[in-house]
Length: 220
Image (cartoon, rainbow, N blue to C red; front, side, top):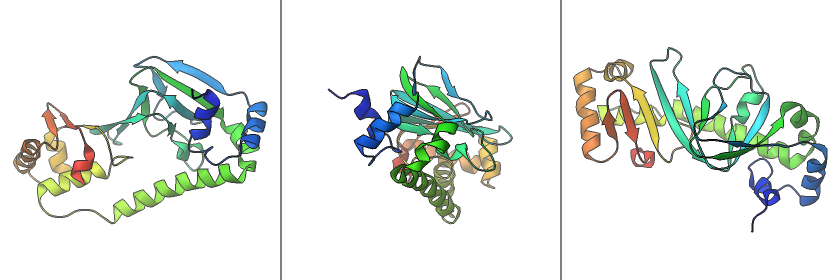
């Protein structure tokens, strides 16, 4: 049976860390284990990120809104998952999304202070952290140069793909048809026809002010 110790070693920032070093870390830091009910907010947009939050089990959803709140997109993540490690440092150290438990969720948190004073002393932890941040930055940069042109269906798919963290799983885009048409510099009628065509192909499902993408991989 897998222990909590084994689960922690599977988390992205600790992978490859020697058990002796990890045991030493556990002896120094007070890990905060918390159980969250479905519907509970784990981290909220625009609040300060002062800790690393690891999702040990369960499912969470992230909700990210545009600056003018005209649209938002929701993603779903299964454990193990690390909430916004990129927000711990930099010019903006606030969460960019809100994270909500979809099921009962168990988390462990580690303060920024301990990350800086102790964890960064371990080379494997530093490398894991830099790889996570670098991979995210490179992915976002590549998306800027891969903007699709062509028919409305292609541009709708590109819009969705450019606003998500992971290119897999279920996504929910909350947006009005006229807002999407304005963003894509197209007419409402053209966008409506394209969305209905994508729905007929099983790529998405349309609801009032909401587009559900059950498997975003199909848009790639």
